[in-house]
Length: 274
Image (tube, rainbow, N blue to C red; front, side, top):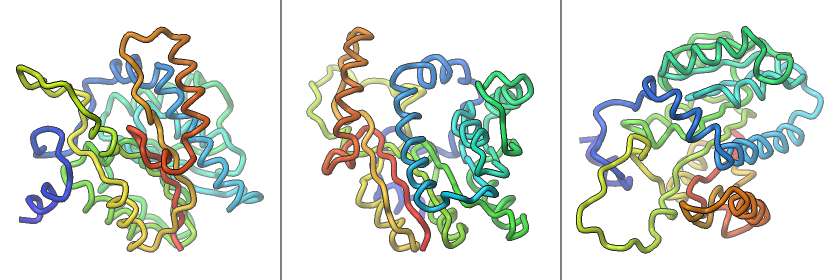
């Protein structure tokens, strides 16, 4: 019953999943088609800038912060945070063993482009595992000050329930960096098709209304301090690299301005727990 109610409250983009998505078999595709592209680099850079600005505002002199990266994929955010001098420890979680193995190799061989200043601890597991093992299984002294949840919700079986579990577990004063697949981006007019398009392996299970996401944060005691819309306007599939660079430059100029900050294909939110 609860699952049916949640399905009705979300816009489901494909058949309702029986379990959370595991990208164990798609590591190379992620590396080439998502993280290794200009769009992927842009998405990472914008989210990292938002987090940098919030950390500077909240913790300018703190050198013992703890971070948790849930669904960390190939580890860009985990390793980026790990290089910062104000972090003591970073916990990485992903359900895909291949992703974790990739991050372990990056750490071992130092191929991530800089010296790690924080201890990075990697785990195979999802959102519920992270909540159970970190928030419920660790001393209060090492509870995360920062939690990153980037492009994860849309791949979960019960995303809003899982998000609430995380929000309720986070401590007062901590920061959430949330990146989610936005419903508004799919509401643009589409040409009619003779046959329905078969869902891609990279088509998320869910998309979310920004009001629903923000309401969930607020009722769980969070104050939203930053919003960024990513890929607000659609870029043509056959565009050249130079056209893509120009497109991304234009996107940067409007990404954090109302109403565009709520109108990306992905929206990034920074919120602090009061």
